[in-house]
Image 1 (cartoon, rainbow, N blue to C red):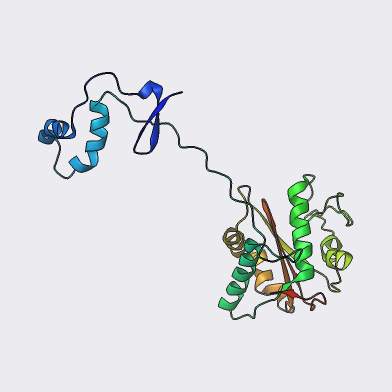
Image 2 (cartoon, rainbow, N blue to C red):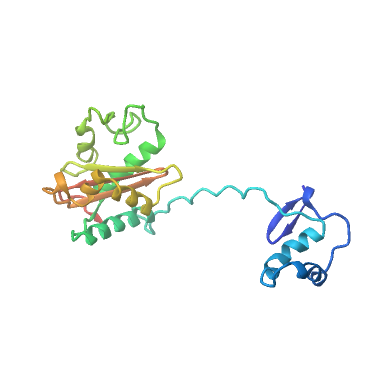
Length: 239
């Protein structure tokens, strides 16, 4: 379909100016000046010109917002390195802890592997209705389990680090889903607004006795998972 453009917006052929002589800018200004306040004229004049020329303004809805760009891995050749957004989430978590007078937690290689594996598993496989976001599918090199919040199988979560990595401690997970694609700031804001998740990040309430010595971050599509542990990671930390 042929189209014409006005102020960067395409006008469909049905809205093209009719074949009549268009008035000049000065001529239209002279016509509308008597009944328009002076301050309105500069703003209205482009629209009046379109109407005077027999055209119409495109009122169609704007095009759909494009999907967020894929998360890029940090500039390193080392396999499994955190993405830029994963590093950003780790940074925001430590900044949040610092604002509450808590020490930073290193980005664990083992727990980051677990976090990324679980985020990818959640992204690729639909869970049964009774299974929460802490569940694992039967489609990977791990023991599958359904984490039902009414009857939680805590070992399903706790044992995943020692099952899949050299990490000897247990792991505690917080997770977040956003259908438009996870970004670090949105994930942190959601956890800050939840008393249960906030208490884990800041070692409050029932988590006061634990001192986090390792944290892993994973983001894949709609999901973000963060794993916390109070043991030092023998596999080391990302820098």
